[in-house]
Length: 216
Image (cartoon, rainbow, N blue to C red; front, side):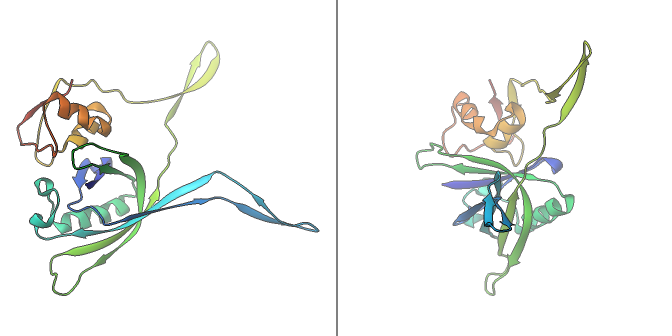
C-alpha cells in the first residue's frame, strides 16, 4: 500500500493524503548547453543533473469511508487551503512516500523536498463534494546554513545544525502518525518502525489520543 504524507514545517503541519494517487510521474532532465561554433558546428556541453519534476492526480473525497486511512481523515477544503497557503508562503514542503507491503514491510520509502509548481482542481457532476487535484511539483534544493568561525587567525566554515535532546516518551495527540512522531522527536521519519517495535505495534500502527509511546 502506498501512503503519501505532506510535512510542512513552516506551519507545523503533517498530514496524510486520504488516498494515494493511482500513479506518480517523475521527470528528470539534464542541463545540456548547445554552442554553435563557426566553421565547426554545434557542440554539447554537459552539466549537472537537473531538478526533478513530480506530478500526480489525487482524489480528495468528502466521505472519510472512501479513504485508505480514515484515522487521519481531513475534509477536502483542508488540503485545498493547505496547497494554496504553501504556494502563497513561497516555502518548500517535504513529500514522504511510504511503500508498505501487505505484511507491513516497508520498501524504498521516499522523502524529498519540493515546491508546488502549480495545480488544477476538477469537480465532476454527480460527485458533489469530491475534488480531483492535479499537482505539479519541482524539486527544491537549498544551501546549508554556514557560519564563519575565526580561530588562531584562521577562518573556516562549519554547518550549523540545531540539536534536540530526545525525550524518553511521547504522548499521542490528534492527527499524529508514527512517521511525524519519529520526524519530530527523533529527527528522522524513517525511524517510525523503531518506535513501532519498541511499543509492540504492528501494521497498520493504529494510535489513540493520550497513548504514551516509548522513544528509546
